[in-house]
Image (tube, rainbow, N blue to C red):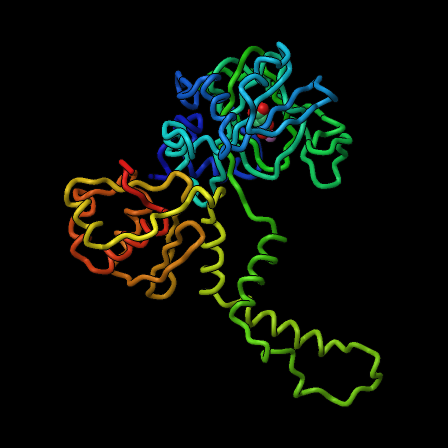
Length: 389
Ligand code: SIN
Ligand code: CO
């Protein structure tokens, strides 16, 4: 993707201009980002997904058993027929993992790293439906899928912003409106993290939220140090062979801090380990139980199947990414990593990018032992699977 090509999705801005001026900085309204967009799923199909055990869904009812009542799915079919006529919202997470046409929408966002994508959440709201004024810690592109929604944006928030007393929802107690628009199908609003916003359905409406995730500093530190600790022996300790006799034995001297700082720096600056951890962490599936491979796959059977025309596709719940360090390549697949020889570079790129893998695009890679072995491993791990399985 050429970063200097004007994109309809970004209202004629290039990806480079969007990233420079708006990404993580300020909101952008784009009329007809996807011209004549028609939602690939309708309200009934969305409600159908919310009945499924493996699908994460919520209902927010503004005047329910209590104000802003939150119910969590899976739902029973008759729950929908008992809802009031207005002022409720059904929200279904990660629809991209269950509906291929929704996953295809993500192709429009390839100017952002795929490992930053969280999911495509779809909401259906009855007239007046809203989840209340709130802020998210993530970047989001709100694409109107059906009907009209009134969006208001407000102030920048943080953890100190006052919230209503509510056990589950983080609804802002104060909302200082700065702008307001009505979005129609195909219109899109980009919001940077922490910007207060409130969307209210004008009529029966569907909104697609393409969400991007970023780990918190606390997550990075907790999980990276946890990962690192597997490689550290109990013998490796704070050492002070250079220490001078204590002047006051009860005082912690600054030279102790310096020793600690160098102990931390030594481990924190290991780029291979940092990269390995990060790739694994960012490709961990949102629903790991949906990434399971077959017990056993014989490489010969696997190869024969491909040669007979079978097609490998990425498990919609799997996440893939690749990187390089020194002369090695790294493939990250659903929370696991593996070092690979540099000659596999084009294969890794193909595996990460292709919708489907088959004899035609795999070509010579099927004659390469490492290449074959890698594909077979990804099937065993569940990140790839045969299309007709
Ligand atoms: C919604 O679709 O109702 C809410 C989306 C959001 O504000 O993040
Ligand atoms: Co939001």
